[in-house]
Image (cartoon, rainbow, N blue to C red):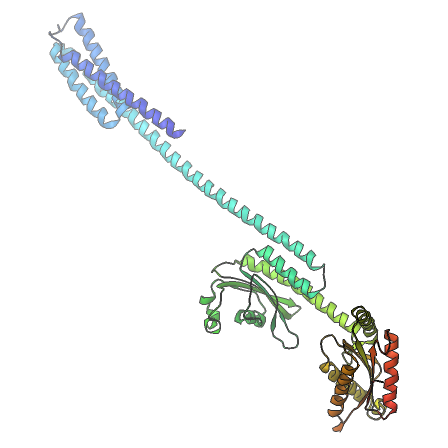
Length: 481
């Protein structure tokens, strides 16, 4: 709108300037192109001079308005001399005094021109200031829009964390929790080509890959230099370019074929203990921000609590079904599984066998060397039995020094072979008690489904009877009939 008004005003002034030129030329033509000399004292001469003076004054003022300083000065001078020449030509010399009115008109035009220029400069400065303010406001609005968009995204991401907390409480199975951590990390961070979850192996005290997403094959299943750094320092890590990070200058020598260039890693902390790390990496540089790392750290903390709860739950379950001394299953759980295996064998028409094992002269060891020595004997024999079982087999502490072994899918011949192997292995490995070697022996009774019974009670009874027969026959024997 301002530009339109400025253009319109410029056109109007140009029109006035053209009118001033036309007026000046018309009057000059009349003065100097008249065919006859005007009488100096005639009424016509007076009127002509008056019209000339008025017309030149109007032309001077219009020239200043229309074309400004340069043309206004030129037309004022030309009008002055043209008017003076006209007076001399008419012979009305006393009219020369009126010529000085041209100077006054020129000064008025100059004053107008100065006022207009000052107003235009003021308008231009005001316009520039307004444009500057508009640009500043526009930039501020754009920045605020970006900040609002960023805050909206940030709020949305943090709202996802509320859902993460709720989801982690829905299960106590470690495998399910690991899967949920993968899913929620992907939906919250929304960056990176790979997500990896490593947990610390309690026995080996090293990282082991627990779950992954976005990677078909993972080379470092025990973590790399970056994961070990987080485990060592216990703080989150962000790297924009793994090839140029001074903290890991030897990374290229360790893994020259790495297919990631940036990463974020958060430790999984349970109290002051690190139980694992959660990692997201990508094939491009500068992928992640500090806010991404902060979100990953929060997910890691929530995930650590869920993982620790799952481990505790698993440990409590193990306590409920395993004997605290020997590590073998307890009788109640064993009989439940035994019943299930009998039903399965019945459906499939397969065989299974039961070994009932008793430590020879165990009461004598307890009475002579004390219960601590008896516990050592029980633990040693339990460990030997566990080490000789195959997948699907099951061993339990049936009661006191008596142990039971369930051999799924084993017929009588195979059961006898396994029982003999266990008996010989125990007898061939002496136990050191008070710096003395003692060869512990066991007696074993064997029963087989369905030849010796079709229920767990019948099989236990048959195996017990044969165990008693083995002990009565001199101990350190296996009896299957």
